Length: 153
Image (cartoon, rainbow, N blue to C red):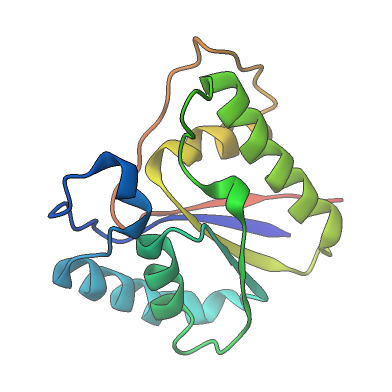
C-alpha cells in the first residue's frame, strides 16, 4: 500500500480573513501545477483520493482526479489547526486519520491524501514511528509536492 501525501496547489492568499482560510482557493499557477501532477500520477494506479474539505484541497483533488475518475473522500481530520488546538492534538488527529485509512485499505491500494503543508509532519511521524508532542517541529511542503509512504500490512 502506498499513501501519497500531496500538498494542495498554490494557495490564493487574497482573502486576509484568517477565520475564513478554509475557503481560500488555488491560484492559476496552482491549477497548472495540479494539472502537471495529474498527468504524472496516472501511472501510480491510484485507487482512492482522500482530501481535506478545505476549498484549496478539494480543488487540487478534483484536478488530480480528472483522468482517474474515482471517488474523492473528504476527511475533516486532515484540516489545518483548529482554534485552541495544541500541536500534539493536531498531530494525533492526523495520525488517527492515517491509521484508519491504512486499516481500511489493502496492500494493493495506492491512496492520494491531499492536505496542507503542516500535515506532512503527521505522515512523517506515523511512518517513522516518531514520538511527537508540542515541541515537534512542523515540516512544510510546497505546492503539489507528492511524498510517497509505502506500507505493508
